[in-house]
Amino acid sequence: MVDEPGPMIPGRQAPPAKPKRFYALASVAERDGGFALLLDGRAARTPARRPLALPSEPVAAAVAGEWNAQVAVIDPAKMPLTRIANSAIDGVAEQRDAVAAEVATYLGSDLLVYRAADPAPLVAAQAAAWDPVLDWARQAYGARFILAEGVTFVAQPPATLAALGQVIDGLVGQGPAAPFRLAALNVMTTLTGSALLALAVMHGRLSPEAAWAAAHVDETFQESQWGSDAEALERRDRRWADMRAAATLGLLAG
Image (tube, rainbow, N blue to C red; front, side):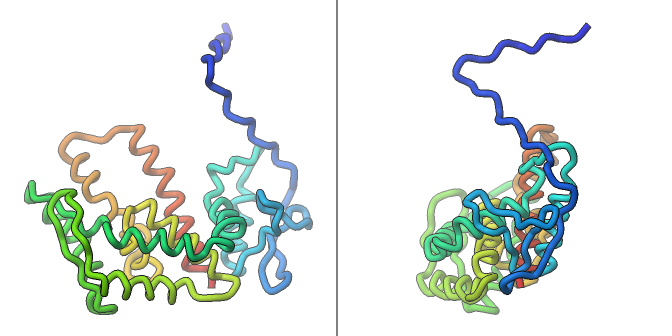
């Protein structure tokens, strides 16, 4: 017996149908100083109808790999590199100052600054994961952060924020790759709650995996005490896919 579909809940719309795969092959071609994504030889476009062109061949090949991995339908949830690239082209490129300022804002209340007072194992885990990143920021850029217990806001030294603001500007740089680097930095910052972790990944001080683990020290500790929740783990896996894609884009953008 086949179950009948349940009634629609008033006020709730069904999710939009995913488009069917309409191409046989995604490939890459160098065009106009960039690397364009081609679908059966025709240039792909972003949601805003701009050419979907990447700043380096490795990034473009990775994006093409996402398109080739689609089967019967195109599922954007399984194409994080494409989504971030679209955002870089359609949004970040025209709002660079605003996006850079958003990243810099996280430095004023960065995850790594706010520490637990207890229990001792959590305090130690936070210190082990976070102190090396703070040490790097201090030694490399003279950026000294004030730590706090709990969630009460503590203002950071203006010189620290200014120094790391310049680091962000220098990292993003100029040229065609700049919006992609900034988009990657923004995504990693918002996913982890830490601009410091995102900067550490972009500078090669942490692997994406290490940064992700550092961002979830508290959750990992709680799970060790009380067990894990399947839905929470599934959400985290989806977010990790975005984190990994952002890191790939940022590190390979050129």
